Length: 627
Image (cartoon, rainbow, N blue to C red; front, top):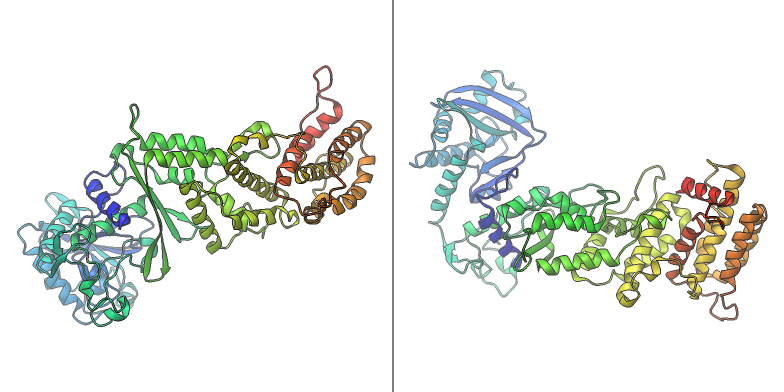
């Protein structure tokens, strides 16, 4: 109900005040369609056929004037009021029940007889009462008799020429408002009841329309027929009138607002660019000059990887500029709502997520997310700053696989991806912790570097470190960002083993680079191959790894060898080898120890006079080469 109330308020606020550059919200008794195959028929103002243009549209919307029956039709003879499929405008085609053309003419004629109806509608009425459109299309060479059945579902749009120019009926606001007033008046003569949304008496909607074009066959609301009502609704209901009832005008406003929002500000949540779940963030009481743009909201929430290195802070600032008035205390009293909508079955829509916030609370939650779930953003160079991984990144890194090393990104099941993003959205909006199951999946992904290319595994590692940083910050807020810099005084077993793993990995990788130079073979090091064993049995794997790395260490220049040996000695002396738990699996903080030690090893080291040593300059070049 709160979502329906927000949609109703949105229609009343938006209608007639749409921001410049955005399409108009459809009036009551109208809806927006996107036909692909159209037949534009040109008539004179006295109803004489001039010509027709059969074409395929790549984009663009067409306003359709609908009835209650045609708005929810699945077939049968329920024609729209003016523009509709070719099969409703001729008796020469089959595809709907007999009498559809006659009903179309009768319905159009009744509207045309109304004094408020524009002359363009009367011109179409005059034509269809005396002509069969199929005959003229064939007679004028627009279609052949053989091709006619293949075009029966093409959408016919009427264009009427006159002394005042050309009237494209689907773009004429006077025609739309005329039909809205006419049909609302006709519909008000039907059965009345209590409108559950307004609390007033109203003519009740019996056949709610479809509203979301991405789910063309699905409805958000439906009313059971009389016969199966008890089965559909349960024993508590004896008739459909006992279900929640919504007035016709109210239903039209809700569905047209939903269409307008999903078309203009809907964000598709999908790992494969499919039209699956749709997310919408908006202000029900918006100011036209401050309206947000869907692409900004998409980037702000990080649903996709748009913007590259763009940070949440800059996105939040852009969001402020669009939503908030400049100067004064403009936050108080501003409301922002968010919902996600999906089709569980081909015929049913449902809101899978709905939240509503006052603006200060909403921005505070975004700030908390970006300030806690973040990590160093650029390889192992800590000077590049930090960023919060997008929701897309977290979901993909947790559940993705590297099916094609030459292609960017990870392949992930759409169902898993959507569910993960949904959980992450709830986490952001509630200010809670990232689900344990998702964090566990990230730990598994990090522990198996052999399954991924180097670049993709580094991406997973950074994402996992950001999520771990959030978990630690939530548990120990007083620590702040202490874990984002190398802590040489940290004697945590897992942290030390992580640091040691980074040293072993760098010794071998640097030795290969030093021997072969730039462009060296990017094969996996022993540290990477033994990573999983090291994480699960670190002390036992350490001995194996040290033995494997020793030949590489001995082959280094004296300066480099001494540097790495000193680093290993400093770490090993802090390990308590008498601890009976020393060989137990590592906790997640080994990742931060590994990452920060590896970053430290790649920093150019200064000599006493402030210049880089030759060997450490080579190390810096190696770091650039690998990253």
